[in-house]
Length: 395
Picture 1 (cartoon, helix red, strand yellow):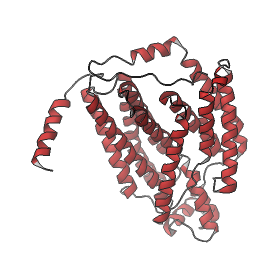
Picture 2 (tube, helix red, strand yellow; picture 1 turned 180 degrees about the vertical axis):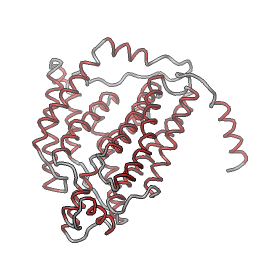
Picture 3 (tube, helix red, strand yellow; picture 1 turned 90 degrees about the horizontal axis):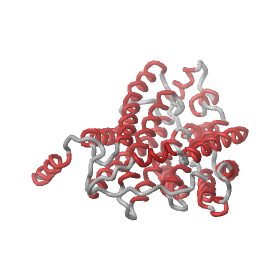
Picture 4 (cartoon, helix red, strand yellow; picture 1 turned 120 degrees about the vertical axis):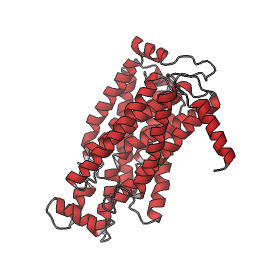
C-alpha cells in the first residue's frame, strides 16, 4: 500500500470512525460504500458456505478447509461492519443495529458450539443439526438488520432496489442452505449406485463406523440423506416462499420475487458448473422455486385479486403457490434431478404458509405496525430519505 493510500485511510478513519448513537447522518456516498461492503461480506459468506457443503460430501471435516476460510473472511468483514455501526451509529436506526448485533452474536456463539459438537459427536454432515441451525439463525437475524438499514436509509435512486434485491438473494440462499443436505445427498446416492462414490473412503468409513455398519448403501444414506423425504417440500413452502413474499412486499417491483429467485438459481447454476468442472460433488438445483415465485408475484400484483377481501388473498395465494411448487417438483423430478419427494407434506406446509401470510397481512394493518414504521424512520439531516416498501402483502 502506498504512503498516499495510508494517509487517505487515516483521514477517512479520523473523519468517520467517531463515537455516536444511532441513528447518525451519513452522506450518501459513504452510506453506499458501507452497504457495498456489506454486500461483499455477505457474498464471501455465501460462496464459502456453498463450497463448504460440497466439500463435506467429499472429505472429512477440517476446521481450516478453504471453504471455511472463505466463509470466515466474509464473517470477519460482517463483524467489523457491525462494530462500525455500533461504535459510530452511522447508517442504521436502533432496531436495525440491535438486529445486526444479536445476529452477529448468535453466529459467533454458534461457531465454538459447532466445533465442540464435532469433537464430541464426531462427523456431523447434516445441515439440520442444532449448532448449524444457530449459524443460519444468526445470519438471518443479522441480514434482517442490514435489510432494514438499507431499506430505511438507502438513497432513492435506481440502484436502491437492486441492492435491496441482492440482500434478499442472500436471505433466500441462507434459508435454502439447509435444504442442501437433500440436494447434494441425492447426487451422492446416485454416484454410489453408479459405482463411482464421490466421498473419499475415509469419509465413507467414518460414517459407517458411527452406526456400526460396514461401508454400504445404508451407511452412505446415513450421512447423505438422513432427514425424511417430506422435509424438503415442507421447508420450501413454509420458509423459502415466505422469504419471497417479504421480498416482493419490501422491494415493491411487480416481479421482485421472480427476480430474486432467478438470481439465486443463476448463482446455483454457476456454482454447479464450477464444482462439477473441478471434480467436487454437485447438487440438485431447486428450479421448482421459480414457479412459486411467479405465483407470489402474480398474486401480490394482480388488480383482480386485490379486490378480494383481506383473508381471501393470502389463503388463495398459499394454495396457488403450493400447487405451483408441487407441479415444479414433479417436473424437475421427471426431467432433471430432484431430492426424494413426499407430497403428503404439501397440505400441512401450505396451511402453515397461509397462516403466516394471514398473520403478516393482519400485522401490517395494525396501529402498532404504523407506529413502529414511523418511529423507525427518523429524518436524518443531510441524509437520504427512506422510501416506503411496495404493497401487496396485506391482501
